[in-house]
Image (cartoon, rainbow, N blue to C red; front, side, top):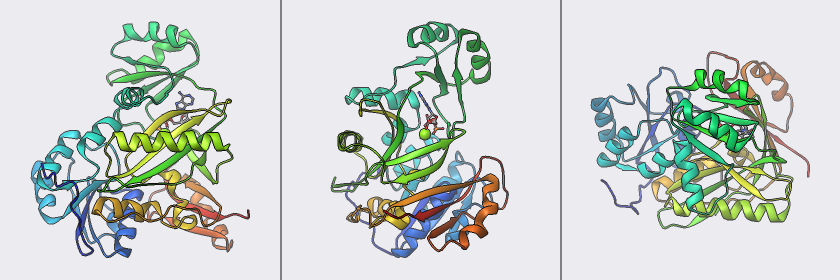
Length: 361
Ligand SMILES: Nc1ncnc2c1ncn2[C@@H]1O[C@H](COP(=O)(O)OP(=O)(O)O)[C@@H](O)[C@H]1O
Ligand SMILES: [Mg+2]
């Protein structure tokens, strides 16, 4: 293990990024601004991140030879999505400094471990039950009550791998669709709104936290983020304290995004965490003193963190699927900051870009 936990990588160093998506792309752009160079490792051709990076390796996430060669060419490694195999993260961390550490990845790539971890740290989550087989499911639905949501523990994103169960008749069809995976059943929460907080934590364990933002989903995909969130001071404090506590308990070096449900009584429930830049943090590119991508690069290279204050209110709008056709409209709006991901193929539900609209107070 390359466990020099406080090692600093100076500009000119090469950051290896596992994953080729838009989060990797915007991380690579921020890295370039700070004088770092990026090498993307992805299993797909022509990815958003590879388009803007100096080097790219296209190979399977389990190709030990390719991973070893990749590690030899970089100074520090990170990941832009959680679904790289844990064995791959462990291998990379033996070859080079990997931030965040494999232990952070292990928890955050598995919904049940993530919830267990939250509970151990006194953080409230929706009532849940790990599901091992069909025999567990009916008693769990009975215990949690309907409606509830059956989710795969791994590989879920944008609502993929989850099915709402409204009545006992829906148990079997849900099981038939998701069986074969580790599953977790959650109570369906009647929340007031959804918010998220992003925390950065550096090698010296200093933290900076962005203010909570409000997230509106359409078809389980983030559609709009509103900054600032319309929440009380009590909710802000609870959300911020919870997020800092989680980052500290994980001994994180990097970024942690914490998705939460706000309840009628102003309390918060953790939904899920992600140890990387997050879609709900894109507003920071045009609305904060330090963008989440710059902050991420600072954290993983061992540099001090930037300030996280809001410099102006922003509404972030995702361009999903055909919404990309509206780009000309946004070019005509002088308050719209356009961020496109360079994806050639438009697919329903695919995130093609986002717009940060500078809103009036
Ligand atoms: N237990 C729940 N109760 C109510 N709504 C939920 C629940 N779980 C998920 N959702 C809704 O579905 C969205 C996506 O679910 P989430 O667990 O965050 O998965 P992912 O973002 O990985 O697809 C959430 O942001 C929320 O709007
Ligand atoms: Mg989510």
